[in-house]
Length: 157
Length: 198
Image (cartoon, rainbow over all chains, first blue to last red; front, side, top):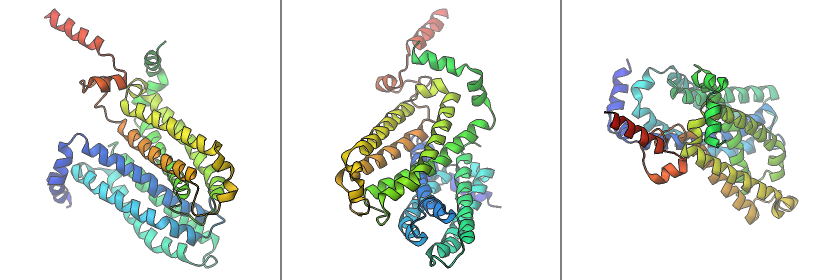
């Protein structure tokens, strides 16, 4: 059903420009990976705190507020660099199990992060029980890890 | 025995061939390497940004070094082990890869930067500036160098996969051959032998 769209994207000017260049794909990919480290730090800082490890003397809300600009900034950068990478090999992605796993996990991770997790990290310290915080932290780590693993495995297929 | 010969010997060991040819082991090790990158470089970046006075300004630096650094170090150990295994799977090619060589130099510089900062006078007086959002000049310098070096390490690490400057690829420039330590004399004499044979 979606295949014609993927074919159109791949044969579009951006996809073609990247495929015609020796350096473009590797460079964009390498920057994509540098941003992964930043988003990893921003996500894990807060998730570790929710799990009750790491910077546990600081309030969750304070850490979440400090991490927020890096989370959003790195996420936007990753999307901006990931979309052209996808455009250069859309048909391969269409047939890639890792790609669909990554996109599903990414959609869930973004929704979860900006709804449930946002609400929990912004609430007063005593509002949610440690069990709730731990569950939210664990789900967040699981979802974002699946995004990362899926992304790496697109390249192996 | 030269390093080249050592790598050749390593590449011929049973385990190296096994890793190289396995269906999943190499990919799994590489995934672990990338996942721990998020923990290790991610937390290192946060410490660097704190040293620069950009974020976590209300968190004492000592809190980050005592509560976050153990996780950072654990992730670093996993990164080194998985990285060594990735090298061991393809030793000879990696040894001559210019991006691997650049990464090794950046890693040494990052280690030197961290060591200089931790052994230096500013870090010894940490109690004086632990809770101040504006950090001393040496701390900011160490943070900035560390950020730049780790970005360069991740970047060049990803580029090891590309073979533009490999000794097996057509020569791009004599300079790159020098960096890669390629010996092309064998190649030309082979070509000459083939030509004279005809």
